[in-house]
Image (cartoon, rainbow, N blue to C red):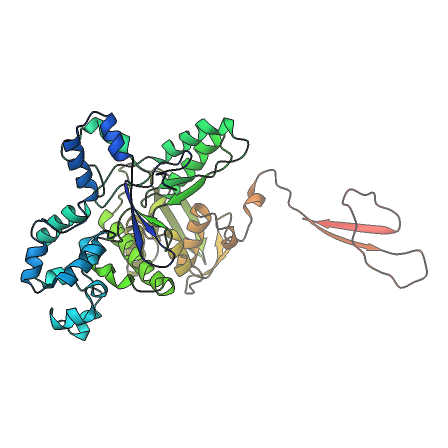
Length: 453
């Protein structure tokens, strides 16, 4: 089991952390990186510098700012330093090695002067409490734990970086990774020589979209693959292999070290949601193109004319709506206009149309009642109910909110029909009604059938 990879599977990352069943992590370093550097012509001195940049020295000895001497000056005895050194060998970040679980509660209370409130604080950063700055911690972290990537290493040539690309970006600062297309084409090269499907995960970055997944499946089908197993990084609450810690504030994750998987899951879920929300807010507003498509739907709701105009993105998603009720009073018309603007801004900031549909359908106020001029909607409980029924049918395929099925709107549709038949048996018994078995069966003298569409 000393192989870095098996089969045609690329390595997950140059430096990986394997989650152990009994708790804790095991640090796994790619053993072929050194051999690859030798093959590319690098000498031993340069290779040592590159490898140390990636995996670190595994010790705080001779580290800048935070080392054995500076720790001793702050009250660390040799036994505590040894515990820290042992923990660094398997840590994502040196701050994990300075948790209360590694240092011991007695040391934290007696030497560091931490009280009960500070010890249970999940945001506790012991190194910051000791007076080390963020730059000091970052420099010591690179020395001890490395950057976990070859990107940015001294003396590495840019044309050689592709040799070390892995299934996921390596470390916090890594940006390079194998694309989903490279995974699929690698499998496609081997598929003709394999009778069954290939058991291999196609790794996708955490930022992968539904459209990226669709394209991956389509490419797999075109290349003749028999299976496609997509996995988006970080999509499971419990992930066996990790290439980096959760989030940028590594000290905030110290509280997860001693927690059970059951207790850890909701905490991780909450932090993942926070990261996604932060990423979406940072992405900002997705504005529509200057020239966009859409449609205008005229209808009469409870005797009041309503014009609904939509604006679409290039991929067909709705991004704005306009509502015009030009014969209503100025106050009501202005309220509807501003309501449409608010909905449009929400759509452009990423609020799903489904949320608006669930919130506004079946709202009840005047005008309401019969709807004229719309093929699919015949009744509505309000103008807002009508608007979001129309948007749901047009953009979400929500036929359950329509009163007429889409298939019935086709020019060649004849409907399913209803059969009403009455048959009398020749025997002198009480007349009994039974349905006709077939519309196309010939009529008889004893049976009369009526077909209604």
